[in-house]
Image (cartoon, rainbow, N blue to C red; front, side):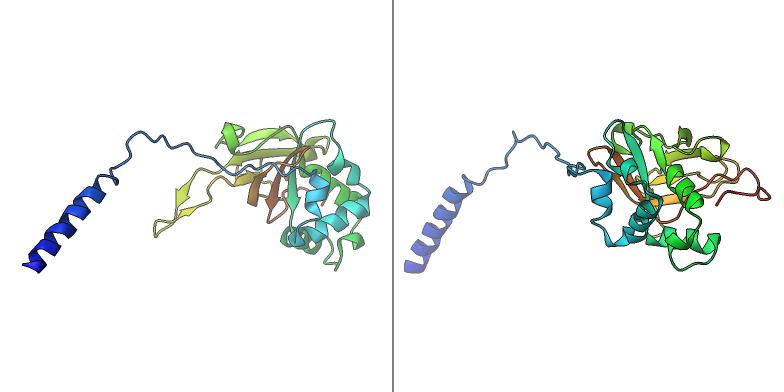
Length: 212
């Protein structure tokens, strides 16, 4: 008898408690993406990353620090990580340090990877089809295209290449050297930063003599 009474009492308590666990129906979900703004300029950010030490050396070697600290206009910076700088060095003269390269060619390299304006994959600032953009390298050698990759999936269903930035997509700018970002949409106080794993360059045909 005691067991029956105890069971009935427990069931009553459970039912009473259930009244306090109704499904919430009036809650509106509001997304809150991470803020890409970092509160420092491009030069300050460049010095915070271990994978950009060779680019720091290149900027100091060419005396171009002012390009990365300026606040007069918005620049989209394509930062070249150490892998990209190694590729440039090997293709240039197979030297051990970027400061052993010709200073004028390093200057042209850096100018080519700075673009006038704001280009990123947030708020549809950059389309999925390549567009021509104006780099700080004057003349024909400064021609570059930019695009943002669509989301895609690999053979086992995982997303890849989601929103990364591509410079000189194959076939979009003659036979120019293509480069893709490994980190994108970083917002310093003076523009936008995308970190590239290779350097880009303009090349009209495979037989052209290129500046770097």
